[in-house]
Amino acid sequence: MTVAALGPQRIASRIKLKEQSIRTKMLDIAAGLEDVIALGRGDPDFDTPAHIVEAGQKALGNGATHYTHPAGLPALREAISAYLKADCGADYGADEIVVTAGAQEAMFCAMLALIEPGDEVIVPSPGYNTYHQHIELAGGKVVILPLAFENDFALTAEALEKVLTPRSRMICLINPSNPSGTVTPPEEVEKVARLAVERDLILVSDEIYSKLVFDGHRVLSPASLPGLKERTITINGFSKAYAMTGWRIGYFAAPKPLAAAMTEIHHGLAICAAAVSQHAALAALTGPQDCVAMMRDTYDERRRVTCAALDAMGVPYATPGGAFYIYAKVGATGLPASEFCLRLLEEERVMLFPGTLYGDHTDDFVRLSLLQPKDRLIEATERMGRFVQQLAA
Ligand SMILES: Cc1ncc(COP(=O)(O)O)c(C=O)c1O
Image (cartoon, rainbow, N blue to C red):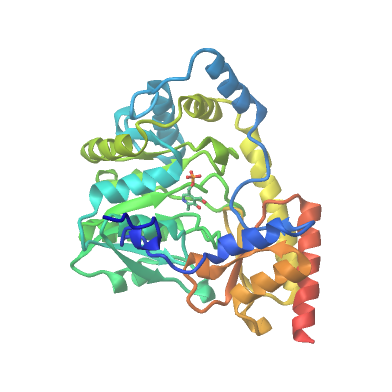
């Protein structure tokens, strides 16, 4: 009997092999170019603050080279519980917290543990599309909650109600949003929470950008509302606020019975989060927070500079209240956003990602991440302005 070669026909049918992702294509093109200004990925340009790195190094020296408890180091879970109580008003005990390999793994645990085949999970669009993959791998059905550019892609309970059906099981709230930076106002979070109770939905609250808000915006954690903790999975992590993407460390908080089921999934995926990263995360949460304020203020300054440059070139965008992205509408230049991004990269060596990666079916939007020093951002917007002018000519 001949053994079939390991070709694409051997890939499981749950993998939807599409053409090469435009993200990969652009990263490949950029690798062959000089002096590219990368405003694509959501990876802070700051290195992890020194005291956090030192805590990791010290922990390694002290033997943190083993598995930990699957749910994470008790001291870290206590610190997360204290943070959620003090900063978010959410009363999760340490035994309701599970430390994961980034918020990404926490999302996957939630879907694998709580979604039955055919359950509908509502996700905002534009939004963080990894949710789609996780929902589908869990056998669930992605239901898009379309948000409108006209009101800065704000998520509203009114829009949510329109997409609910008897099969609706879960709603994912990403606040502030990736890719638009939109902060859902507290009063709207309250309405969404009320709807979740009325319709018996699980609420996944992804708060990974919650420390990075500007202009006096406030992120309301739904788990802080009366009766909501019982149905809310709060997801957060250290990647964005503490510039710790490479440590792969995050967590979820969930009511005890759900946390127990989700821990089993987490154990199957990772056994536990890396011990060294857990010690570093403990230092991040319990150490000085001025590093977070410094990075947030820097992102804010970059946001203002970039918004001003987009205003000057006549490119509209959703006003970002948080995170470190600007979601801009380039459709009026005459090019679909994906072609705009490819040509901007090839002709002006600026890398942005098209909104199609975040659910934009019109192919009109691009996401700029503000993760370059101010002078490089200014240079990037000058190059982009030149490109937009050429298109107009
Ligand atoms: C909204 C959102 N959630 C989760 C993640 C995953 O973050 P982590 O690095 O903690 O896995 C990201 C990363 O970009 C994100 O934008």
